[in-house]
Image 1 (cartoon, rainbow, N blue to C red):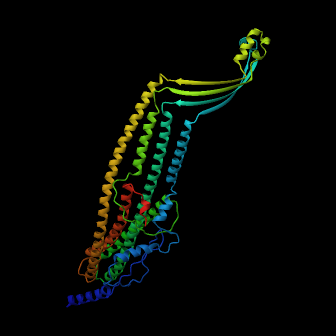
Image 2: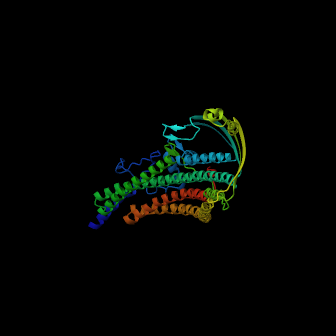
Length: 488
């Protein structure tokens, strides 16, 4: 009879504290980009009930709760806004300025085809003696002034001029490709942080819902323990689970904050909320060249043209020089003062005409420079070969990346279907295990395992959705396409 009375009391307590116990509805997190999830003890009454027949959270409802997290944000931005802001990234702007600089250098190089026109003025004062100690010839103490205008044109420079222009243009094209590659790289980083943010946000939501569920169970087990109907093991296990969930929530909040700070760093824009947007399905293309490969090809072209500038040909120059003797030496204008022979006066006049124009054609061959030119050409050729090997490696890498991320895209798509099926099964399983646990048909360990499986399935499903979008971006980038063309 004593055991029968004990059994009846046990059933009554189970009915009072188990069957009529209702769980609080899933909470909605604070709607802010820097999500604030409270982990303080619940202020609800200790006997707040939760129905055993509470419907499992559906897939669409789960996504809606995630979207609702930032519904009240004043400065809410989407993926297109973030990519537009990424155009103001300081690293990208530095690359753009470098490209503009190379464009100016290429324009200046074309001026090498223009003739040179130089104007100079010269003044001289010649001394016959200094302190009667040093003699400088018979003609001293006179001044001269002359102005010259010289026109020159390289008729043939061994093709170095045209190859220099080609080199500068190739360098400019390489820098333009670098700008585009840097832009796409930053876009990819933005997308990675963007979907990582929603990944962490979904995990934060699951952890918060798990924490509320465990707290509700803790209240119920506390009542059973106070009545002597539950063990200290179950009670302490729940307390440990609460502390563990609070720790995980704090860690996940930090991850969300890191995503936000990284997005602000990459885009230079301020916001307090994000709108979740998807990418369109990318076209599968394997015949495009990535911008880093284009840049490397142009660097190889620049080395080729630089090598061609080193030549063994003579340089042919046409020149025309005009000279105006503003002030002639006094021994020319007044030879008698210096005791010169009067017959030399006409000679001096011919040597120092007031106006003179000289046309010249010069051919210059640097004989001993050939040794240095040979070594320079060898060094440039080796650099070119090294870059060509790097190009072959990059092209093989691009082929590998395109095939890899095409396969990854297919796998990510199938993961969504698997994760969705797993989530539905986990919800059904948890509902059944919870009913059995409330009726004390399964032990506490089985209940916690089912609870953990349920919320892990929720997080996994959201991760699968975000991972699929991320793999789209990876394929677009590594196949050589432009990410901004696939923003909805």
